[in-house]
Every structure is written in structure tokens, then in C-alpha cells.
Length: 281
Ligand SMILES: [Ca+2]
Image 1 (cartoon, rainbow, N blue to C red):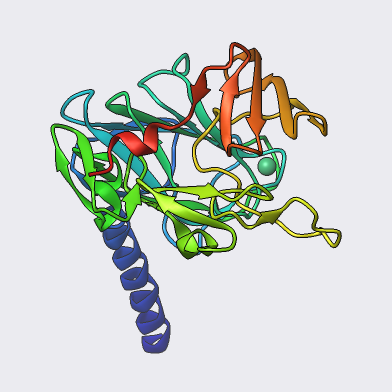
Image 2: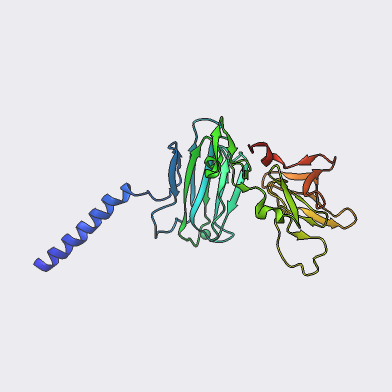
């Protein structure tokens, strides 16, 4: 009897401790919306090692102080039933806001930045089969990604160090010194390639018969898209990209990448996507 009493006491204490510890850690995902206003935080559907629940619809809204601030989300882990359970991320405070990404499966998404002053995250799961869910940290900053430690923030714009560019100073200018002197030369933060080379650091050789290799041809450029059409036209040494879908709208634009000059143009010949130069000192 005494032994039974001891066992019951242990079970009771264990339950009490679990019940007490539970609310102090991240509460499990439920069908509510939670609002975060701190400048940094962790968002997750539940404690480590536990799965999200079936038929989940959980919302997290991150609010910055104003619409000029940036909210960046960085995933630390990701695991949902592929093609059935999703994490959606919106640039705004409602599901009518622009969709920045929809993620499913076990591949950790890249960093995502919202520029509206809000970021809304939704975990949706169907009615069967669950996995561990996701964990991500967010940061609110006055400049995008705090200028990536390669610049300083001035009135919500990054002023980048001399070798760095891009909206968040994350883009290294004149990589590999443009292959100087054979492939190209660095001029005002941009590689100017010799006639038979192109690409960001002039790595693409026009008469390369081996191929089968990836090259960075540009940073920034046209807006991200899927389901577009593209053809290469040898006569003009250009890549023509038409339309596609950006998760919110069907696109109807024609964009052209000129390999000879390493730049994007729209159909009127106006150069686009050179914004990274603007912020460079
Ligand atoms: Ca599921």
C-alpha cells in the first residue's frame, strides 16, 4: 500500500510539473492569432519534439513600429507534410496582403523580409498526418537585415561599404576582381567584361564548349517569378523571359537579359534591376 502511495505521488508530481512547466514554455499551436511587437522573437507551433495538431489553422502577426521598418524571418527548422500542410508568409496583416512564400516539406526556406511593417504567418494542416512543424526567429530593424554588417543605416536606407551593394549590402561587388585582366575589369562596383565574357564576375566564356556549369549572371534584376517562359536567341546573344506568376499576380511583362552588356532591359530597352549601385558609396 505504501509502495502504491509512493507511485501515485510520483505520477501526481510528474503531472503537476508538466502542467506547471507547459504554459511557461511556448504554448502549443491553436486556432488563435498571436501578436508580436518585440523587436526580436521566436515563432513556433509548439515545443521541440512535439508535432503540430491535425486541422491546424494558427496565425502569428508580427508588428513593427511603422511601415518603414523591415521584418525578417529566418527559419531554424521546418517539417510539414509535403504538399498537404503549409506555412504561408504574408507581407501585411491580412490574407489579402501580398504572399511572400508558401512552404511545405522539410526544406528550410530562405530568409524572408516584409516591408509593409507587418508580417503574417499561417500554419495550415489538413486533417491527417502531422510532423514537427517549424521554428523561426524574426527581427525588426530600421534597415533591411541591418545592412548585413557591411554598411550603416541612414533613414531606412543602407549606405554600404565600398565593396558591397544591394538593398541590404549583402551583395559583394566585383567578385573575383572580375577576372582582371583577361575576363574583365571592375568599374564603380560593377564588372565590365571583355568582349567574349559575361556574367556577374565575367565567368561565362562565349566559346566554352564544355558547358554544364552554373554561373551567376546577375544579382537582383527581374522580380522573382515562377511558371514563366524563357528562350535564348543567339543572334542578339540575349535571354527573353515572358510573364509568369509571382504568387499574387499573373505577369505579362517581357524582360530581356543582354549577355553582351550583362544587364536586364524591359521591352522598351530601359535598363532595370540596377538598384544595387544606388546605395553604394
Ligand atoms: Ca497533414
